[in-house]
Length: 178
Image 1 (tube, rainbow, N blue to C red):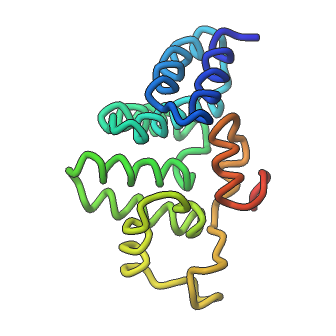
Image 2: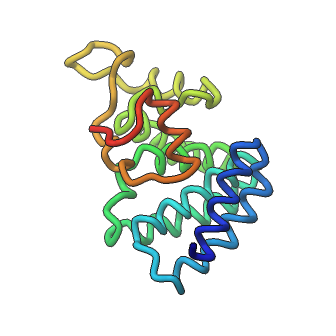
Image 3: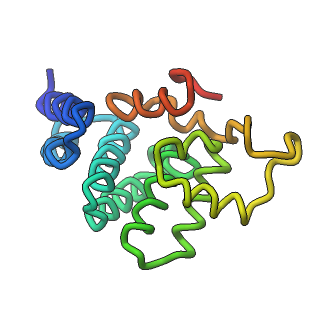
């Protein structure tokens, strides 16, 4: 078992126990180890998204922002960032928490909705989804948002740990998502 893997598993366990502040510390301990252990770039993106998720849940929005910037810097190499509904949801939540850039908040919530469907917002403040649904027209093929599954859920197929469980619960099935 790798050192980063032990921290990640412990962080995931803490998230399951609704202890995001403690989980955040574990994920932060894992992050530098992913560099020295040769962790695949896509896996490193999910470590950063785990950090961002735990940071959002604890109100540490500056930390979430830094993790998302790190994930975005890996976007070209990883191929699972831009268009990833979870990335965009967390970015929207981070901008909402920072209360600094409403345009980027709305843009990221819109991307989360378009890329992952309304199910991405399950368990989140319903105002975020409602606001975006007031701006965007529903998909023409359905004429409504209900039942829309997004256009790039596949960007999340390699998710692991707690985030995999969270997304499976929200989306109603485990990956692979189409």
